[in-house]
Image (cartoon, rainbow, N blue to C red; front, side, top):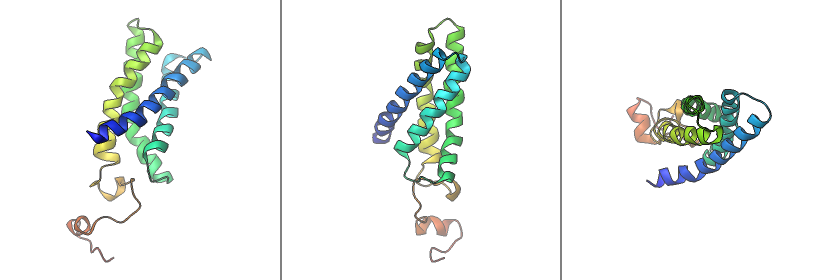
Length: 142
């Protein structure tokens, strides 16, 4: 529950960036699907900077790969709602809300999972715990 609350704080900041960018891009003349995609990507960068400890390119790319699922949900819900007659900003807020839970699940279970396999461990640059290394057939001493 603490993870969800913490994610809600950083996700809330990213949501404000997402919605604000979306409205600005709509006013600049971009179609809703393009504006939604670009605004989500901007917000994903902000979210990563607020939540990740590993600032490497590899860590960022893993985070973005995880965010792809959330982006598809976010843009899909937004587009579907607009097509159904919902005002664009309200549609975007709905998309953000639904995608929040998808992103949380992906990030907590895959991208930032403490017991994730080494290729997806981006929270820390420290070596895996000895017990985990031994379970993968490796010696903790190198």
